[in-house]
Image (spheres, rainbow, N blue to C red):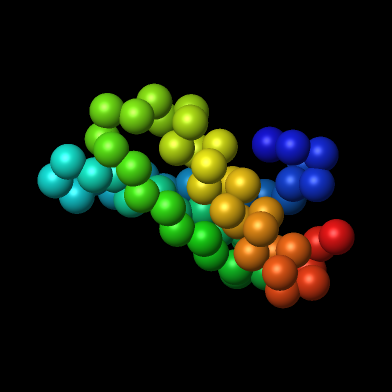
Length: 66
């Protein structure tokens, strides 16, 4: 996680759907969720990083973080 998301509790969930993996990242404090998907052969660390980046984008857009 980058500096902005450091210290925030984030729950990551991986759900395989055929050849795709749905990755959900939820900020525990605000219950804000962001979802991405990617090919099932993509490294888990990359999917996790992208989900957290999407969550960060959503939190910024809502004005929760700056």
